[in-house]
Image (cartoon, rainbow, N blue to C red):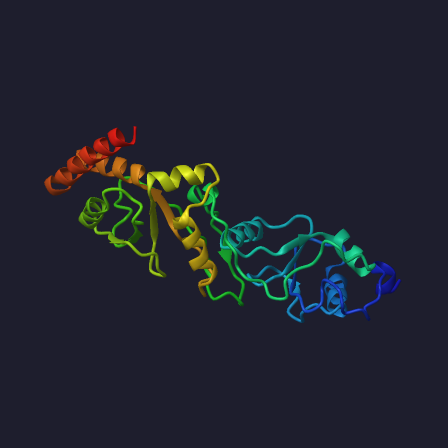
Length: 270
């Protein structure tokens, strides 16, 4: 039985969804080598092979996919790299001339769309052994976790101008070794959402702060969206617990002033 009998279709037509596309195969297939050879006959990129990279445009999923690969895929999607996911039956459709629904862009570009899943992002750890990746080893952006440790020390924190009591927040952040910035830039580690921005995002609404973060990352050269999110209320709650356990007169004074402003703000908003 020859390969043509296995998969059907003609390899002469290079005007199809596989043309110049990088196709990756993950998991088990009855005849993986033949499938990879066939997609290349249909004009797929010579780089098409077993495995997953950020610029994979079409990802063919088999059975028994290793957990590390699935974790890497989850992280890549979080970072905005989202290939077209298909299965062997879909490939057979393409080989037989059924192209509708399998279109992909000629160049895969990252595209994040921030929602609450980014705020509550729990990253899976995985081992990245792909030689084509510049970041090897364990790689996945991590969430901000408040605890016993000072989780903001040495971090660049974007505090949008929409946050109330901006100067107070900056001073408190500075007392814990963080660097508050009114501009979002490539050095930003943490984004502190205002209460208003946070509540809107909970409703599926993006204000200008969220839209700007999306735009700046999507247009940047960074392959990884490793921003940690917090909000004004969570941060102040952490500070309150910390000064109770580790008394700090300067921070306590700032915190009390902040709480007074917060009460005034709540009164005026009612």
